[in-house]
Image (cartoon, rainbow, N blue to C red; front, side):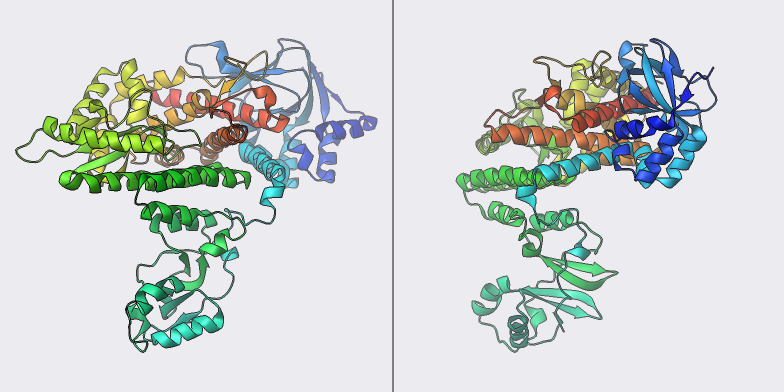
Length: 633
């Protein structure tokens, strides 16, 4: 029986003022908030009383907690444990998914204590969705809406350091400063140099029918013109670089920055349907940001000794701090960090291999494992790596390993000197257990898959995320193809991995928002991102994708299994928020000269961050529920 009562008109101002303290009502237009309040009823629920349950065919009302607390219990539970429930407090609303889909709620909502709720009829909820874009965005993309608020808060916090700086989310079309200055491929070098001086530009692109065929920059003048002593009347195409790097106008700035770092280039061509529309230089990207991404990558490529690389490693960490302060998103930032760390690792291996002589000319591949293998490194990361090698005819794996282990030890020590601590668990290429031939890796993985016990499942969380860094990459690709084929239809191993993953529940509490651990802290790595990482790994292995990054695995699994795209993006956004919170935590720890870690006291978080983290943990519970349904064979 409906015992709720309409709000009295004289209570409208107080209700509006109250709701303005919570998202999304704080961003809704005044007329839309007025529309909502005028149609609200106020309901009272005694402790233990069920408010919404899956028994009804479809949800009839939208509820906003006004006072008290509501317990939400998922309709699907593996073992009926209490930790499938979580608490909803003042300002939170439910059951959104059921209302949006005109279906029954998948969860039961009951009053944890005597509770008052604002209530809106389903038909009025539907109408408000069409009236208010802010309300619609919140209801359909709740995590994205909250994350945008968090991003804006971060940018406001660092306003002094980031004021006026170019966003790394900006499309290249908004960064191109002028129409491209071009020449014909057969234009004389002399004429091109004169045109560049007159226009005050640092590059010239040769085009044919609007399509770029070569680029010449002021950086090329010394080596390709002056020192080479060429005839200035010869065609410019003969000394131009024809290895062109281009992106479409819609590509974000961070993609251009990554390409510059990977290729060591200073310019990116902006092409629309094959036609040149602009040139973006390193100066265009970073003049306001003062971010020397390409300078760091260039220093790494040209480094001749360990001291230079140690300085480059310090620069990478400083760059990460700067970019975090400027509001760069977690996905982009971890890609930047991992890309530069890859370049640093490659250069260390190159220097050691040059000193080792012919040893590295044999077939070997350096593997990144764990978070580095997933391209998800933060500011605090140790080493997880291995080697896969081929065995020459007439040799044995033991003899090849004996030669490679001293080299691997020097590489591990050099990485340690650059700020990547040696792995406490000795998961490193210098450990004979992880310096194996291709056949030995296959045998080890096959044994793990056959056994499926706890040590194996822990190993899988590190080793199954391998990615090639240096050397004969086809060895890693062959191992990945073999592993995917071996696991894809192995239901018993997938089930064991699932059961192990489900033992790590996001720490949502009943008495308070969170279940804290030692020192009243939350472990943002183990209890935060790991549920998403574990689920993505299982989804990825089950569908046989070659991706190792968590986000790419989730999206690939969503496409393969035709999952709801909105739900998958909710998982992605929750994962990225926890990653961002880890990066911000480590950034503040570094500023205070404290050891970097992943544990945060939730009481130190502001109201918005507590709410988003709570929602992110709920998404973690949700992905585990879906994982459980898929893999309880």
